[in-house]
Length: 377
Picture 1 (cartoon, one colour):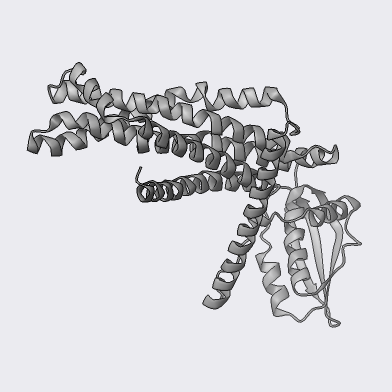
Picture 2 (cartoon, one colour; picture 1 turned 180 degrees about the vertical axis):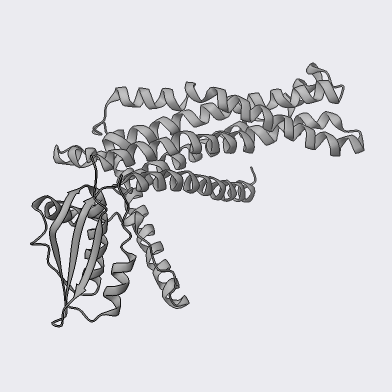
């Protein structure tokens, strides 16, 4: 079948009208029409109305819709009347449908060329709004925990078991690898300095206290932030897009109890246990360095390790791990529940959840370390 070349010719009339004659077959496979020449002509003329003459128009597909959409966008921006009554019914319906689809906020271009004071004010208002929503979420979670303690929280026990399994057993491989390497690194760093004084045996103290009190809990929490925190944000964000959370509220089910609470309980219970395991693995990494580099026997190393670790050291590590687990779950659930209703918003909330969780972990580590130092433990 032979197709005619598509054409668009603009004819300007004295009363401020522009008539655009459409002819030929408007198909992507035939030729792509550039709307820029027509738009340039429209910009140069003082017009108030755009009409169309489709009498010579042949077959068409979305190629003509792309062209007409650009013309319509120009007319809307310039407050020019866009008359499409002469166009075929199919084209007019598709144009109307394209105009009815809302613009995705995340996809819009935002002007950044604004005065510095305006930017500071806008940022301040955003921070204020974010702080208010976070405080509100903290309150809702606190009330939910209160209902749980009274036995009135509404959630499925099977969900809690599933999240516990995902945050516990399934996380063991990556926790093992990372903390073994952290133990090796601490032992290497300590060995280089302590060998200068002939005090290699104290590598065991360094690794044991460093892992059990600080590094095991922190590294495990960071791993869970990238693993579980991001997953929580993505899951809840997707549920927000699919309006599943709205459906829960319609049925009278509190989404904080049903969705957020079991995730927080799972991480709050599993991260301390993983931290204990991570501390043991880190000590094992230090043991390997001591045996193969420092000529320290396994018996000497373990004896020094047992002497260095006290019950208080274990307790402080568990306290930090519990705090970190709650913060990771909170960040993931908060960002997921605050997600917009698009795929781009879900991606942004997932990224934000990981960043928020890591920042909270570092801040909490600094604060708890200072508090423990002040009270002398």
